[in-house]
Image (cartoon, rainbow, N blue to C red; front, side, top):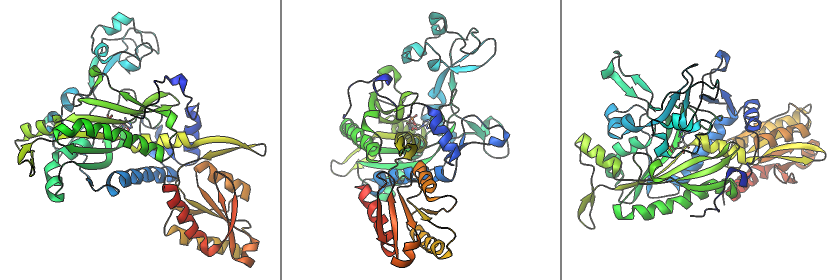
Length: 469
Ligand code: GAP
């Protein structure tokens, strides 16, 4: 594993020291808003604004490109959010998908035990100890009141299917996309004629009734996942697991995440999720500490064996080479576009002094930037200039996200585009009317290049291809 030496939060500085810097930029510039804000909001749900939806779509596209388009051994799937409730009994989620919850006896606030001050570093065994609150003398962090013994709180959201709201009609909002890939294993394998090893990739919404959501979009109750299930022969699972670690690491660095702010962390045996034989997280140094960005799991034959046993359907794979029937093992890469977009946003943020003023720049990779190019008139009072700008933007917009802006002086327009990560600005000026040329300004170097207007689009597309490497 390309892991730097063991790090504590203090060894590596976050890209941004205060989370508020990102939260306020996100709100001000239209990346992320609190959900239902005019009604006071709803906890742990966030809405993506005009720039946020572009960023998140670009993250999902970049993941799909790397995981499906560029590989011939992985195919896509889009399974339903609602599934037969038995799926979640078989998968172990009804019985085991829970966090330890404690309740203050005086103000009845509820907390996740492992996030209480003094309990952050407890082992999974300690977290299951019913006497842990007493043993450590833990108190309510708000009013200092006594806390209950921990109990397990199931994170799945329930709803009812059909017109009758009784126990028989309960269905769950999926807490992971993975199960949709497992129950479709045979469908996908047979219809796409894939041989082992092969993978199924999914991007989509998942829901968890988190006890203590927070840190902006880091932990939400409604979020998206980007998960890939790689089916392998049992003997190949350990090697496949090791191969996926550097691949997933380099996907983040390829799109700009600073290597020293990433690390791998292997789960201790008593911390493993109920389905995992082995798990390693890719962690990022967020402003609030090292936290999981993505998990890579060796799930063994846990899921397919259980679905086979409970559904009564044969989920074995027939290997024509050895003429053997067996249940494949699964290596899973489990990330999410919300957490990934958040990470790209934080890591891209920088403030630098230019001619005595602070310039805020989002150094986003061009593939991720919401707008690839902004077309700006130097003089908005000259209709000929404005017309050229609109024509150019319309032409660019056939291939990339391009925006026109004339609502301020040119210096301010550049700063606005820097702050939202637009890699290139194209300025049309009075001279353009004479020489048919425009200026392309680069976000990072701030260098300007004069080029024929007819070449602008080709040059932007070439730069995009070059950035992709
Ligand atoms: N199928 C395995 C699984 O779901 P996980 O580590 O619980 O594994 C995978 O979740 C990824 O989903 C996380 O690494 C994170 O990127 C994203 N994720 C999980 N819970 C989330 C939440 N409450 N808010 C935002 N993203 C979340």
